Length: 207
Image 1 (cartoon, helix red, strand yellow):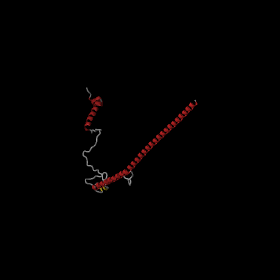
Image 2 (image 1 turned 120 degrees about the vertical axis):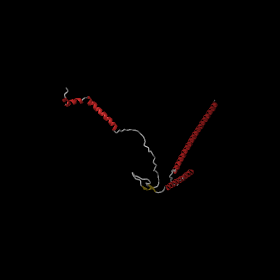
Image 3 (image 1 turned 135 degrees about the vertical axis):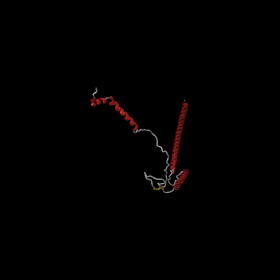
Image 4 (image 1 turned 45 degrees about the vertical axis):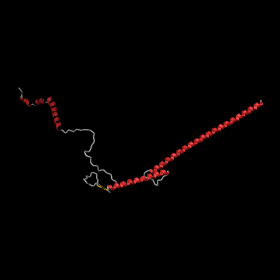
């Protein structure tokens, strides 16, 4: 007969629940169930590394411009929020006046350049510097470089001509020396020949 008093003993429960299934399988099962639940409710983060470029979806109108007029009012400040039709910069003068001033300046530069070119042509024709003052375009310097090159070429040509002339003189001197030597040899030969003829004549009379 089974003793019911054993049900009240802790040894029975220790032997019953402290086996392989309760110590290994049950914790693994609980961990698996917890992992499945975590995958449904946990926040997933995915990091993707790639290269690319950022481009606007719409091109904004350019507000950059150049102006040579002085600024008389400046409302630009870093980080300041501006509204539509707000005055940012105020220039001294109108765009038409600025454009006219620039065109007149360009016209004056062209006329000055033409005048300096005329002086350069006149200097080349007369072979002397016709510039009254130093020009800002560098044409006077160009003429001075041209003059230097011409003088250098003339000096080179003159030196070459002098070398040729000296060579001709040296050749002529050598030619004259050879002629003198030939004439001297001819004189010696004639004298020797006359001496032999006299000797023969004297010897013939002696015999």
